[in-house]
Image (cartoon, rainbow, N blue to C red; front, side):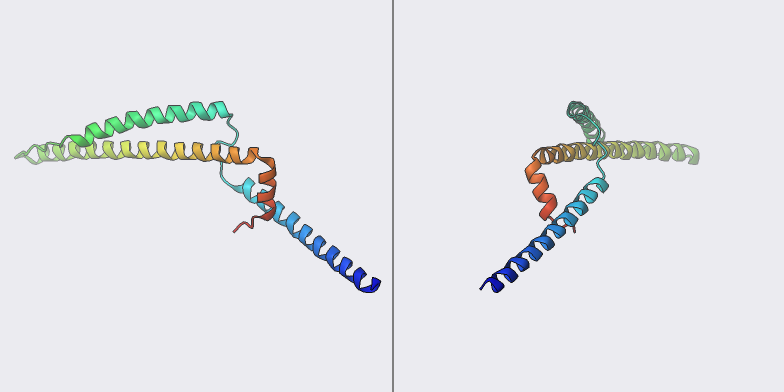
Length: 143
């Protein structure tokens, strides 16, 4: 009976060693994946994140009002008889359109920045719980 019990203990020890080795390897893979993850606001303090978010939200509000003002009115197109006047009118309408597209681009960039700031905050909250972070790194398989 001692013979069978010794082999079971050895088998259990081998299984535990394999599980521990896999866990350590997986933990290191997850740490490497986290470090490779783009986090442009990683080095900012929490206060800086709050200030930056507040500033971006104010800009979004300003750009939104400008966009609504521009898109709320119809662009009048003046009909002209001469080619040079038609060309100037076309250029004027093009400038208005380009300005509106540039405004939309700026607005979209601010929204993306706010999303990145919110993601950074969520990541920091997750990292503050050391036990859960350790378990996540140990048992999550990065895909």
